[in-house]
Amino acid sequence: MSTRRWSTESARWWPAAVVAAAFAAGVAVWLAGWHLGADSAVYRAGALSFLRGEQLYTDRALSTLPSWVLLPFTYPPAAALLFTPLAVLPEGLAWGALAAGSAASLVVVVRLAARGSRLAAWPAVAGLSVLAVALEPVWKTFFLGQINLILMALVMADVLVLSARGSRWGGVLIGVAAAVKLTPLVFVAHLIVTGRWRDALRALATFAALQGLMFLLAFGDTAQYWERTASNADRIGAVHWIFNQSLHGLVARAGELTPLAMPVALAIGALLAVPAVWLVVRLHRRGEALMALLVTATFGLLVSPVSWTHHWVWTVPLVVLLLVRARYWAVVAVTAVFTGVVMLVPNGGRAEFGWGPLLSVPGNLYVVAATVGLLGLSVRELARLRSARG
Figure 1 (cartoon, rainbow, N blue to C red):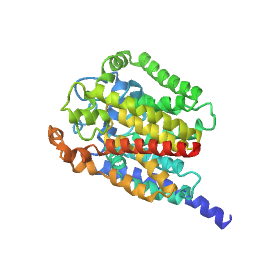
Figure 2 (cartoon, rainbow, N blue to C red):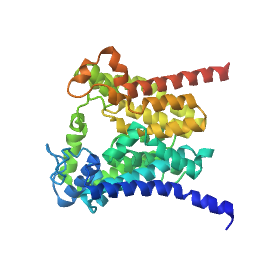
Figure 3 (cartoon, rainbow, N blue to C red):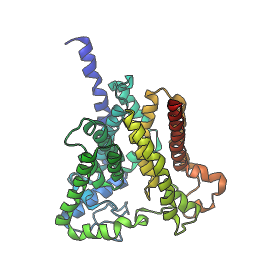
Figure 4 (cartoon, rainbow, N blue to C red):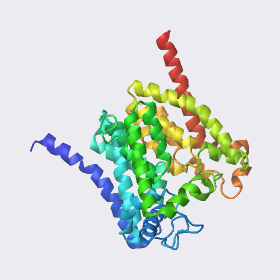
């Protein structure tokens, strides 16, 4: 075996080492009896409740949850079905399994974002994956045992690989992701806007098939979710809490939970949809598929009723893309925004209502930065268009 071939093959062990380290950490946490992964505990409990025929959507925590977690199951019914592999694991090891899956997904995301550049080399991918954990959305996803990184990897693999190659599986992964959390449905719109109707239909068909299956397996829970639970944003948590970094959260904080918060947020979102769709179309036609996808992801986070800070993991491919393009000043700016400044702002209870102008910007930093970035990119594209015509 040549030295070069051995070097290439050995380099591919770096990402595997990252995933193995994450799982080893999960085993250590389990053996030590530490309480990490409140959300992974909810995933596992939802799967157990489904398998036992117990109600998923009640006014109290699931009976299968550990005593230190008091959270409701807020995900679509199909999520409980897809989480069933967690049910076979010991209670404390569910976090380790999600941590390993999230680490693997992080490697996939970095690799896809760095394609065609020197940063796509496996040691660089592993290094960037480890460094990405410093971003608040990423480390919080790991800490909570959330599934955000896994869903992001599914969407990126679908849009940038399967759909881009014209695969007959294009759209399926987006449908699966949307069956776990409804927010990935925004990427169905992305497929439509970029002219991939068949993939969009496959995504919707996959989503609908999984929900239809749950009507057969758990009719009561499924009917209750679609009749009442899906439209109740407050069930997920206080929408005015600082960690809800969406337009709805911003307006709810500014208006002290005015009933008009959601309509106002939707109106702002409708205005932002115009430049967002225009950008997606232009970027996609120019061959900037990842940037177009990031615009859609950003818009989706802004208009979602609830976008917790750990949902903003899309910062990772953005930073990698900026590194590939050598936009180091932008890397510094984005990193500064997403390393947890919002955590330093007083929050909880009614604290958000007393911020005033001074704390409102850092308290809504993710929303403000994303909106400014979206509008700034639109202005740049307009200037580019006028320059090309002039």
